[in-house]
Image: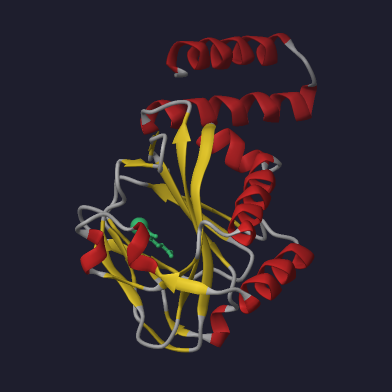
Length: 222
Ligand SMILES: O=C(O)CCC(=O)C(=O)O
Ligand SMILES: [Fe+2]
């Protein structure tokens, strides 16, 4: 499932990230790419070993934990490998697929990818995230503070930035439910039971949908 979350950051959080990253030291992005993605990755990243990068990872994790849509649709087991990235004039990330597993000591499966756009889209040219499907490709350039969440199974790229700076935070998720089709069934059931609850309270219909949701999650969670 591909979806966006508008304004996942408050304006204070957005300002904090931008202020923080404007002063930070970035390194060559190739250091965290797989052997084939390295060939097409031309960007910069916050050095992931610094205390600033650790603080940023924790902050993003806590923002995602509080977001009901993200929790319901992605069912995260762990949000991992969070990185801040920077593209200046001429930088891009060519077509690639994200690694299936990521991590340094421990490996996490890569089911879902996300980009949290930090720069105002009016301030840079290019820099669209383009996601390919079998019959079409779609391009995304969201407003600052909004996030796109997409399956890690796709081929995708970041178009060259030709003016200005594109700051973003990217990350990956190992979901409790590996199969995207099962995840979508759970998301629909969760949405349905919440809607019943909002309209009618804890009715028998709510209880039955909840029972099915819970039993399927029990069956599929790993
Ligand atoms: O910056 C983005 O929108 C996506 C970057 C990306 O594809 C990656 O880091 O693997
Ligand atoms: Fe990617």
